[in-house]
Image (cartoon, rainbow, N blue to C red; front, side, top):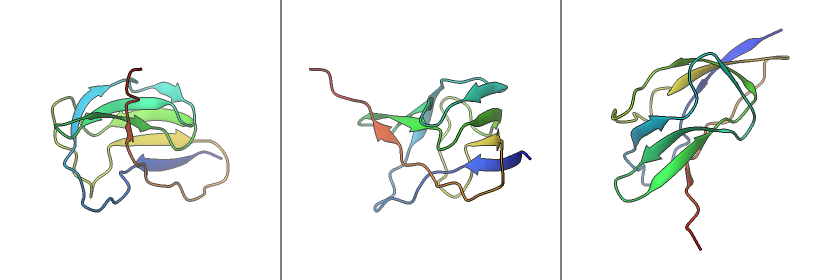
Length: 98
């Protein structure tokens, strides 16, 4: 049976102020575990926001240029299987070129 989860940022200390730069996946797309969903920026570097679990991305709550509030979800994803806890996501910094 499918269940719905909301994609949230993990708590960091100190909590960076992120801006959503770009959605990489449109609503209605099936996403895989670990797939890059969006690009975030803290003003100094850019980060990928990755899917913690496979599912159908059904709704974005933010658009490009908007600040990310760590207390609110960024997106809604519908996953298959028995409902289970889904971890919050820590943005992953882009790899530096060689």
